[in-house]
Amino acid sequence: MSVRPTSLETLAVAAGRPERLPDAPLNSPITPASALIPGGASDYARHASPAWTGLEEALGALEGGYCISFASGMAATTAVLELLPVGAKVVAAAGAYFGTGEELRRRAKRGIVEVEFIDVADTADVIAAATDAAMLWLESPTNPELEVTDIRAVCAALKTIGVAVVVDNTLATPLRQRPLDLGADFVVHSASKLISGHSDVLLGAVLTHDDRGARALHTRRTMTGSVPGALETYLTLRGLRTLHVRLDRAEQNAREIAERLRQRKDVANVRYPGFGQMISFEVVAGAGAAQQVTESSEIVVYTTSLGGVETTWERRRRHEGERDQVSESLIRLSVGIENVEDVWEDVARCLDVGRRAELGQRTSG
Image 1 (cartoon, one colour):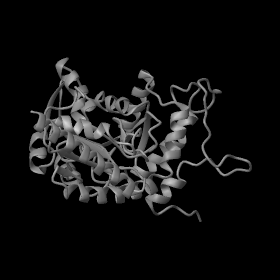
Image 2 (tube, one colour):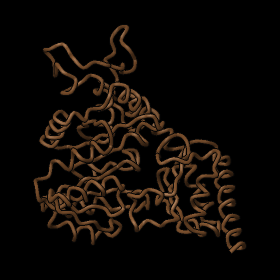
Image 3 (cartoon, helix red, strand yellow):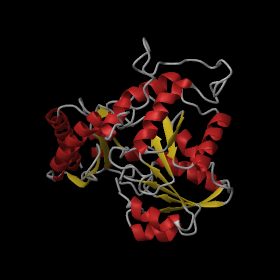
Image 4 (cartoon, one colour):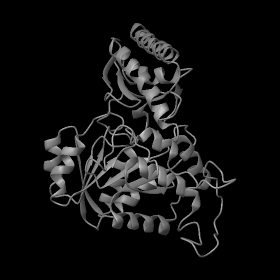
């Protein structure tokens, strides 16, 4: 009788392993091959590759669906959008990742799709807006404002009228929510973030229960060549093995730091959804002070990425593509697995630097 893992934590470690044969490797090996010997699933690595098998099996087991990996999160996103017929209406989270928003606006400008952006925090509004749509694109929590959607309620209301629901699950991961189990049709990941967890990979993935959808995505990947590399899939699978340990520690740190941020008078609108490692907050003194805060850190890394073992932050509106609705002084903080006291000491010191700089400007003015 075979023993099957009963927890997601065990699946993260055990799924996607090579067959246990004498002298076989414990881990899926890196397979840097373009041409394959005919007679199997593929004879060319753009169609299918053993380099992806372990990762797709493991992530598929965690999310509970078929997994198709892509060269990046945006490659995964555009592959899903390509499933839509020309002229279809897409309702999307206004607070979604700005790359997703930019791609939707680009397609709308060319007449490929019709797009409506909405606030996804109000379930009734989401359902009402999407009733005449072909696809609803959710992100929960959103990035960077960390709004949360009632995915189960939305999916239940829209399933009967045939609206496809896509959930970007990058920030929550399957360890905190499994959108396919909640009724979603597709789940998208930027696996560059929490899944791989070490800020050294570009990789994306789409997951679905639907055989037809999975085949269409596979065809799209093959024809566009947006396939992941052998080293990237190897590193992502290796990172996935420790996701639960990394996430538990980072989440513990994030809860503590969010609470301490709420006690400071120079900080406003602290957003933390209660799970995960992401926090956003605004610096009361304004955009200039917020920028100086992020550039003054020594332990916290000033960079645009998130979801790694290291704590990172940035002022989001420094990017031209970020939405105007995002406050100029909003800082997105991705909390890592360091000692929480070390991280907080750096954060607090940087906030003090920003406050002193703002006071100095007032005095000189």
